[in-house]
Length: 248
Image (cartoon, rainbow, N blue to C red; front, side, top):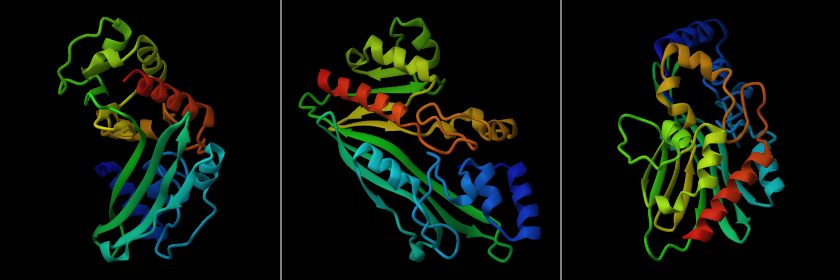
C-alpha cells in the first residue's frame, strides 16, 4: 500500500503521543484497529505480541463450507503482524482457493516505531481445465493497457479486455458494469480475480486516501464501517466464475 506524506505525518504525530499502531491500520483501510485485512476480516495475529484473536475470516470460510488456514507471523523476516489466511473448498464442483493475506514489516525508524511496509495478497482462484491454453484479462480502463473495444459501450467505457474475448460474455460484462470495477484473469489452469481495488491511481493521492476511508469495496461490500463480507456478493462472483469455466 502506498503511504503518502499526509498519512505519514498523522501516523508520526499519533505514535509519538500514543505509541500505538491502531490509527494507521484504520486510516489505511485495514480497519478494526489492526485486526482486519482489505476484505474487512481479522487475521491470525497482530501487533508485537502475535495475539490470536477471534477470526471472522474463519467464520466466513465456514459459511462457504471451505477449510481455513490462518497465516503466521514470520519473525525471521521482521514481520510485526500477519493477518488473514487461505480458504480452500469447492463451489459448484470447481476447486476454489481464496487468499486473504496482509503482512506488516518493519521498514526503519524503529527507534520511534513509525515506519512500516505492508504487503497484501488478496485473490480468488478457481481451477479450470484449459487444454486450449486460452487466455483473457479484464482490467479497469487505463492508458497503460491497449485493447480493442468489445462493442459493449458501457463496458468499454470502464474496462479494457485482452486475450480471448469470446469467453467474456454479455452477462459477465453486465456483471462487471454493475460492480463498477473488476480485475479478472484466465491463465493456464487458473481463473483468478485479483483484488487490487485500493491500488488504483484514484486512491494514491491525498484526496484518494480520504476517499478510501469511506469507500465500499465493490467485490465484498466491506468498508471501514462495515467490516463483514457479504456472502451473497461472493457467491454471485463465484457463480460468474463457474460459468466462465463451463464455457472454456
